Length: 157
Ligand code: SME
Image (tube, rainbow, N blue to C red; front, side):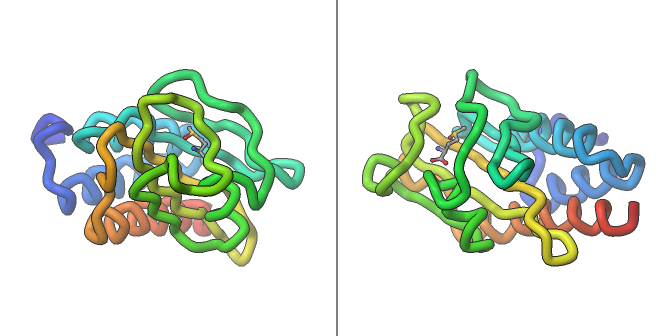
């Protein structure tokens, strides 16, 4: 990697994620490294990680940040909503989101991108920020591209 992660532009961050994925197909290894890269590269982020779809619910996967709740019912919270709708959910003010699950009281805004491969829910990517309305339309596009790269790697594994 040529530049420290915290200095990477969004495009360079995506390239770095793709480079990491090129060398490995294992879901846990890849989600662990993506969580680390996003947590280090994105400013004003206090949690970045994954919940994986297991036994009909979301179970905590690789992450960076504080201790988090371990299981989320599909349809509950921001994560469960994104998983159920299979669409990215951006929440500018988590305190105004009905059913938001507060894992860290510091969190103010959140983005959750569902991971769907071959029509099946694999899990979600979840990022929290202490800054209200932290996640822009550009962030959404970039994070959806990160998840698409992960899904592509799973599909060819
Ligand atoms: N806030 C999430 C729960 C997970 S934590 O943010 C890590 C939610 O409402 O689904």
